[in-house]
Length: 230
Image 1 (cartoon, rainbow, N blue to C red):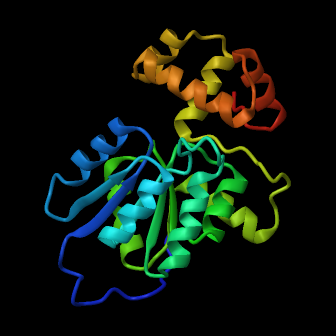
Image 2 (image 1 turned 90 degrees about the vertical axis):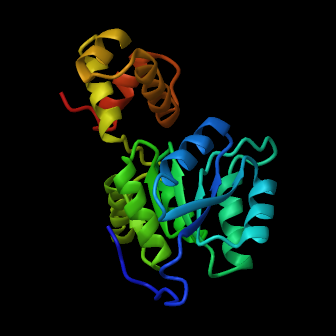
């Protein structure tokens, strides 16, 4: 889902896209750098793991696009990522923030947009889609994956009935469906051709989104919310 906005300065259109990657996990920052710098189109000019580092990096390097995880490990601010987004876009309207995060719910998507973000994609996005989103945001357009786009549409139409409406990614929906059939993590991994560790990662994310602690609660709560497709 993209929407035209401003035009790119023709004097800078042909140079590599300069990125600042903000994520509190070093391994994710390094992985993104490796993936995005495979060609000549993009270069990561700085990385940041905290809100303070993010602000300093953007001020020092003035990137074209900031890849921002909303869940930064700042003990004094549960919404550190949103705060960073608001501060960066308030200080410099030309800063283009693309949220790249694990979490998706109505409040986060809407607040990210209100905070000045130009796009919102989940970390399970494939490399090609992420690159397309970065290109769109640099070009002054909006970029949302299909799940975030659905939340935006609901918000604009007033059809969202809960402030924290839960949305699963396609992979999370598959995992929950198999959980409901009683499969173990290992069996789910075999069925979806992913590792058991990856299954645990998705189950943990689903529990966080639903606010539950046990696997059985995942199935029960998903059914209550109409998110369980058998």
